[in-house]
Amino acid sequence: MVRRFPVWIAAAALAGGIAFTQAAPVQAPDQVVRTFIAATEKGDWGTADSYLTERFSNALRPGSLPSIWALVGENVQLRNQEVTGKTAYVWVEGTDSLEDAAQRLGLDPLTLRKYLTQPDLADPTYQQLAPQLVGLRLEGDTVTSRVKITLYQQDRGWRIEVWQPDKPPAASGSQPEKPEEAEATDPAPSPAENP
View 1 (tube, rainbow, N blue to C red):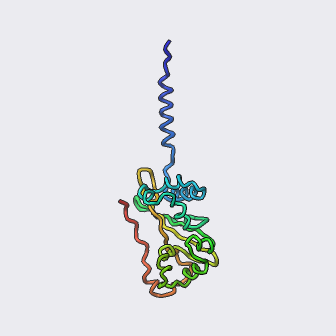
View 2 (cartoon, rainbow, N blue to C red):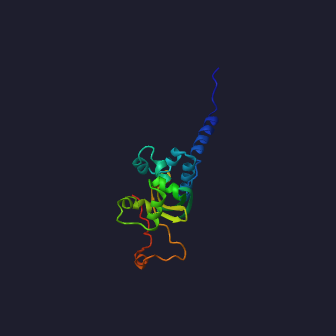
View 3 (cartoon, helix red, strand yellow):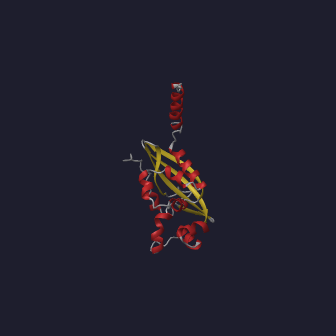
């Protein structure tokens, strides 16, 4: 006797499999960054890497993602986002103790304090670290790091293309130390479409 497998069971199983694979919700850029941050906080670097564009992921040295992201600091919080077409920017801030931030940068705390409050532009070490110091602000013994994350919308959804230090906004009521700085400050450029 030949048993026939009911076709409706196969169709239901196939439809269930398709529905299951499509169940992942589409995430907005800020949600992608939140998920990325949650993965880094758990040490789940495979999941964190899955939120990077293929180009960015391939450009990183194997195993370097934890040390690169660590420069953002602890207690990372989203501050704001800007979306134009298929490009988005999400700003995040993290905090760290002066000692921990200095250690990550390979400096002693007093040197980092000096670099953040009274930088010697002729100092070769300062010149090397200047791009990393752009997003840092010192308040007491706490270093706040501001980072601008660029995301591109791809077939797989929004993915992180790059992040870079971003100059923190001036504290409310504060004035630039030099009048030229106020005039030289340009508004943020509008985002360009990604390639």
